[in-house]
Length: 382
Image (cartoon, rainbow, N blue to C red; front, side):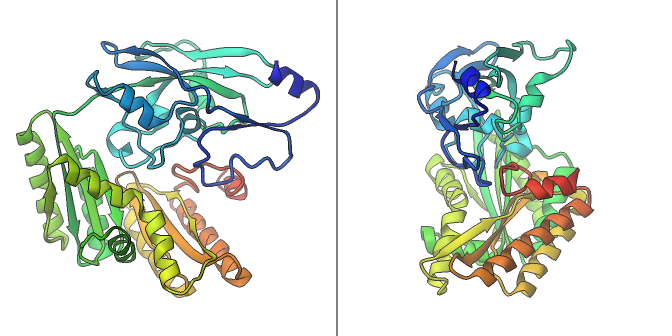
């Protein structure tokens, strides 16, 4: 009824989930109605034998995994924030585990969608494959509310791994770290996470979380398998590759509290960066502009090194972090919101980073989506 009335009166509707998006997706720039999905929090089905579930759009990923904890299953897509499943589907989210499990595009099996005229449609099925007509599910995943409002999402689930080990390895150079990533991916080693933090990010994380990592470009890994032996063999192979590229002090974290602490530090890199900016006299107006390009793995090394040089030449500070196992990285560009000249330098630098990614066959956004912030870059990409 709401959708039909809004269509009749040409009134915009903006669905609102957890508000964790980064590109202004939920800003009502034309006025209208903000439709909160936060009361749609039911887990409607869990099919343990078929490894799928059906949830309402307002269920958050952490709530879903808490609900699943007694089933031996989990939903692995991890964008960092405790986003709603509907919002994650709408922005085609991904995160630290994409290198193994894929993004939302690969993990949404079907949707219930309310179209602009109020019509309710259902896409997809519970079957693992289908050749029946257009793939409407993938059309809606990533549509950011422009084609309809997602109300229910059917997801793939996965078994909780029998053994998990995390590891951290500092490198003498950024190139050595990235070359290690490229080698690991090209060799087909099934890492479940492989994250990069440059030396500025490590400095920020150490200061913010009290960790004592070497202040060098650093890779964070996670290995999953059926047995401890399988996981150990994967970790040892990656350690050898890292050593050949200037990696040292390859440190394991097998206990769950140690693993959680390691990934907590990674997920809080944004807040650590803001704290670093305030400590370096950026002042109370300190903000961080997160870039979000993704490039082919073979061009990752050159893009990262050129981006690092560009940041230094601009006179700005921008720690680099990334889900580099799939070619996605972020520069967190620090600025003071009360300094228009500094903000313009950040905008110009972001545009150059996007142009560099597009020039090698990449994309302006690997996981944050378009929203308001990347409309012009989407035009350039097309």
